[in-house]
Image 1: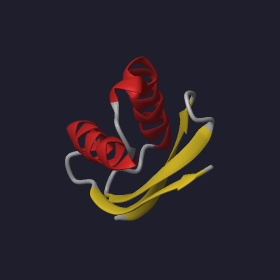
Image 2: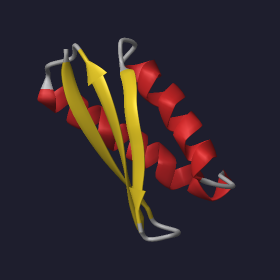
Image 3: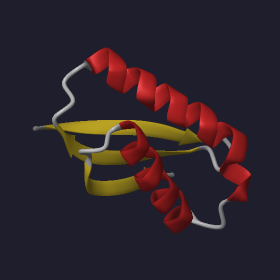
Length: 79
């Protein structure tokens, strides 16, 4: 198992947020592609979220769709 830090950007608030997971996935290119796909989806729906709690819940579900063994460690946003 290894730690993977996903970085995402919120274009509406100009904030960056990070989602740290632990996973057995070792393919860095695959992890980058997953991050890019999730960011693309987020860019289309970010205005639908009321707060970062909703973003966190959405990210948790979305990452587990792509990486079933992902174990959430932390979620942090930087303004």
